[in-house]
Length: 586
Ligand SMILES: *[C@@H]1O[C@H](CO)[C@@H](O)[C@H](O)[C@H]1NC(C)=O
Ligand SMILES: *[C@@H]1O[C@H](CO)[C@@H](O)[C@H](O)[C@H]1NC(C)=O
Ligand SMILES: *[C@@H]1O[C@H](CO)[C@@H](O)[C@H](O)[C@H]1NC(C)=O
Ligand SMILES: *[C@@H]1O[C@H](CO)[C@@H](O)[C@H](O)[C@H]1NC(C)=O
Ligand SMILES: *[C@@H]1O[C@H](CO)[C@@H](O)[C@H](O)[C@H]1NC(C)=O
Image 1: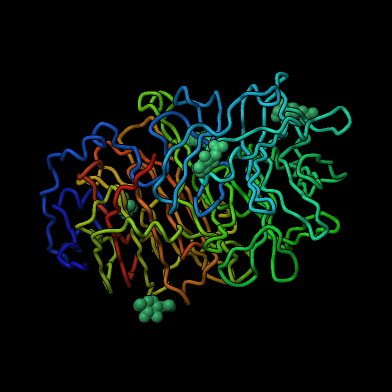
Image 2 (image 1 turned 90 degrees about the horizontal axis):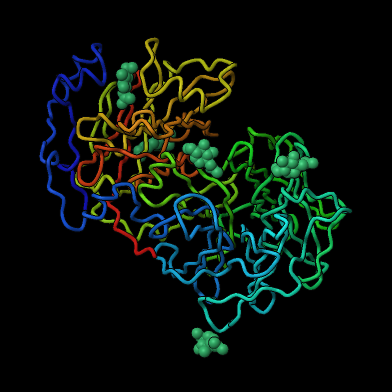
């Protein structure tokens, strides 16, 4: 239900306004004499908020177990209509260690039911840990998992596990192959036994042979070591890697999959030919970023060649320009889409993690497809998440003068989904992008959300997880620059004022987005969930995920605002915000 009264322009008392926007904008107050109700200041917490009162940073609709450490998503798949998510888990505490495969299932990717650990140390080939891996659906609808085991010599080897009972749609029990390990470092194969992990989903070639890649490195060369097999049990190393790149360091958690050249539909790994491109994603151990290239796979030669212009380095395209790591896709055969899972770690101190008893969440699963440009992927939260939307509030055609701020009232701002779109009327004041301003993250942290004296288009965007007095907020915003031949759009997620607690990592994140702002309104969607803000710029062209730990902006004392701190007015063409219901998770 749209409710205009729930959105009221705020121009706080002079003191607060002064703090925020400085002298030069004081006169603006005359335009917006709408005062903000003070009712939410001292709201008593209701019983159902008790849990969040004690644990204000636990999420309500992001995947996390009741306690302890989690990291990489593992072996995601759909089997007999049930979605499976396995994940790296420490049953004994909130820091990394004692790693097993924990297991949950779902019918909608949103509500999850826990099961017993699926894979845990039990054979010599995994006695010191069961690390990441992937599921492959073999012919006859038979799932198989390849995963990394740590053997008694602390070497990384690859193992196979299959379901004990294929009639059980929950696949609760897994049996390990007596032939494990199936792939191991040997004196002959020059594989570094400390850098050999995370097998991908395998794919079958038109020649009927299975292929899989395993992440590795040789000195500073990132490697996708390749194996082939006729029966999924006996694997032979191919004499060359599928792909490698010098200077990138260890490639963890590789993911390799085809994407349709047109349309949003996902395709299975066994699709080849001119209607698809391939994507190779690697998780860079050195920088903790998931980067990918779009390119071509030649299955006869078993080589992958990135497209011309697809950058392969620390500065390559990233799934997410905030926190997002060890991600993995799977093909959802039921809904014909490719779905991406990614791990989002904490930005709090280890001490705080131990105190709260948990660490790590999974990002909301995202559908991924190739952008019409063919140059990059588009990512969008799976449509099922919209089932949690509630109490819609809406605003259209609202002009935001410089220095103004508008509140989306009537949503539970600590737990919300918001979409906003801006129209820029005037590009004259766009700052010139200096040639040395190449690093978007640096640019965001240097510029912040402050206005520039000489004038600027933006920053405008959202202030999320904001406290009543705006002492705490996380701003997600756009800024437009004049590049040499085109306008350049910068998206920032600024955590510098997200919390009064100084023990958190408050790095500001940034990304350049491939969009022409003269031809397209600048849209932004943020999924806000107590301590996580997942933001999608320009309909999924650029994503930034942040972790924040407000001390004041918790429970009911949280606001959601749109703001413009640029020189000229911008128009909010549309703002829609929803409260999000709590998902049933584990
Ligand atoms: C296999 O799973 C099905 C479905 O849950 C169950 O009915 C059957 O008893 C199971 N079989 C065995 C041998 O456990
Ligand atoms: C093997 O990997 C380990 C762990 O990253 C590293 O410390 C070592 O230098 C590597 N050895 C070689 C020869 O690359
Ligand atoms: C986790 O977060 C910390 C601090 O925010 C960061 O330095 C680290 O690299 C992250 N690790 C991974 C694997 O993302
Ligand atoms: C807007 O810019 C002013 C002046 O640079 C700055 O103090 C203020 O924090 C900015 N507002 C927001 C919402 O970031
Ligand atoms: C921006 O949105 C407005 C209102 O929805 C629409 O009229 C306009 O055509 C859009 N502008 C661009 C450049 O797409």
